[in-house]
Length: 163
Image 1 (spheres, rainbow, N blue to C red):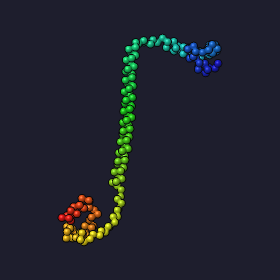
Image 2 (cartoon, rainbow, N blue to C red):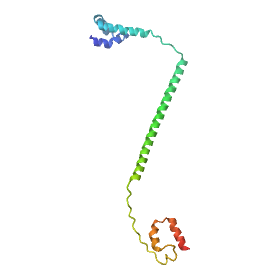
Image 3 (tube, helix red, strand yellow):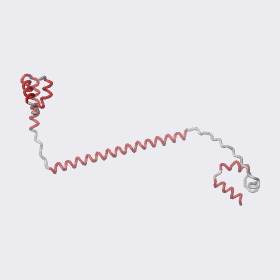
Image 4 (cartoon, helix red, strand yellow):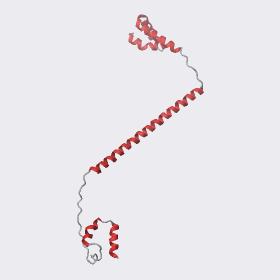
């Protein structure tokens, strides 16, 4: 076996996870190669010191309290993320609304007015219906103004006429 193959399988060798054939090949190579032997010794030392570490044994109440604490922290984080997403969405929509509002205001403020040609309408009013004797203004003035009056003003003129 080559050194690269040994380096890839050395952890399995120390852990005892290789077949007998692979194990004998690696042992033979370790006896011949000084560099691979040093690496094997350092990994073996790491494994032995890791096995000496004592993990404290906790009762079930400890784990339940730790679980509840961790679960509450995770739940608060999720709630903050939902709040942050909603805030981003809200501010995004607000920004879009403000852009539309300001662009419409700018458009209406600086647009050039389009001249409107209002056609002159001639009215035929018989003299016996509307006469200058019964109206406070002349008939010609009334004809010029009648299109610009509101319905209430029409009613006022009619009421004045019928009096």
